Image 1 (tube, rainbow, N blue to C red):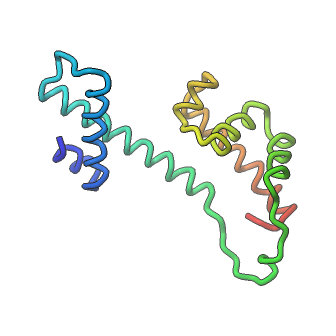
Image 2 (cartoon, rainbow, N blue to C red):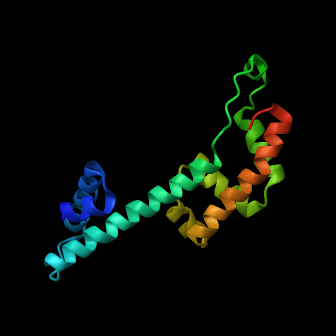
Length: 148
């Protein structure tokens, strides 16, 4: 199982986590009668693929949030918005559903899957709402506060 996870993930630590996750979920839910070698390997493969998918989603979001660094002294003195101002911008600028997705993701720290279940939308829709929020809020932040 570990060899399969390492081959899929190319990371020994992540592979160990995946294999441990498979066993912990089996122990928590009770070992099914069909838990033979093929079952365990399929479970490991599926967990590894889920891990890769989650990394890909995080990478896409991180790319969207990449801030351009400027070392001008003026930037250090720019006003930084507080949480209330940001919350007001979210409320004023975004559609209600997009604002809710942003709140669930960044204020409550929910994962895409939890947000999609709570709002009855797909994980892709969650990603698109967050991307749209960034597209809307970034120019507003830049205009008001001189930040990217």
